[in-house]
Length: 155
Image (cartoon, rainbow, N blue to C red):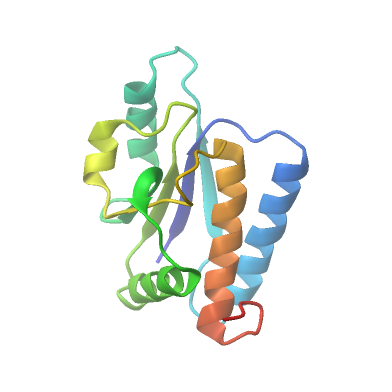
């Protein structure tokens, strides 16, 4: 199993980068004993200004063949953290690669959205894509702690 976080844009030094690094490090440690690999982060950047269609082409190249494609999209399902953990555990048990995709400022191209196995929303509000990276990293860590029975997640 491989876990890939593919995102449009380059993360610069700052509080978001610190939080993402922290949560992905925690995930790597918590997930190791659960058979969850560290997350590979792949950033793409449309330097020619082609918009969502060009971003979609770049993102498609980052998605491992046969991977479960999870997009972060305001139109997606609002899952609970335990529901997300269960899905992640199921993909792990199937030895299926997982690729989480975060689009750019304009969102995800409809052609890529149509290919997704799952669209997840963090609510009806629109979030800056750099904050979405932080939230995805935290939810991955939370999922690992839920799967391990850790008290980090309280219900």
